[in-house]
Image (tube, rainbow, N blue to C red):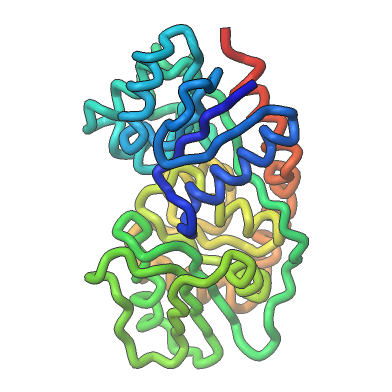
Length: 310
């Protein structure tokens, strides 16, 4: 089958959507399909369109539907789709209607859709193939944050939490490109380092050598970096939002209230002792590892895209 995979994240970008598009293209090609990856549809010969992002891929979705009304469209919903755009954007809402299948990255995302649309939904949890395992540094209690600095990520929350923490051996390492100048980290606290954008492999090495990862997002569709932390075995300190709960589970012990730096600091203090809570988080993350295996994602993707549409 010829598949046009459309993603608004262009070549050279280091965001989650680009990583997802390239990984999915690899899975589909391994199954024998011919796949083109582009920021807009350029293949009028495609049998099927797989589009990431309801609003930003709307033009390609609409054009494909108009030109090929009998061909299938599969739409993968991002976090900004699920928790913002499909409620506010007419373009995103039209994309939902034109799609034959909707993919979400964690099961709680389907709750945001109108009941009549939920029959189209399939869940494809993202995976990681990294062979790195969790080996945190010995000389500090390292926490890492991985993700571009933009409003939805609440990227400065961990830096704000440091003022509640007095211990000098805490180390916060933040990785990600500055997408909003207003969010540039400014601090004299030597316990904090912002590395900017780094290659994916290097970001994973920082993750593997950290005692825990912080994801402080206000909005997530199902963050790939959470899946990577699970694969590596690194505990996750996560804002209690639907996108994180959908991956980590209702009973996960490492949540804090979104936007609450004091609550994050309190959680950090509890896990820094490496006592019972830290051991619990390690066990809970380990139990989720099969969920993020590449074969699990590939199987779910192939079912959603090629085998499960009337």
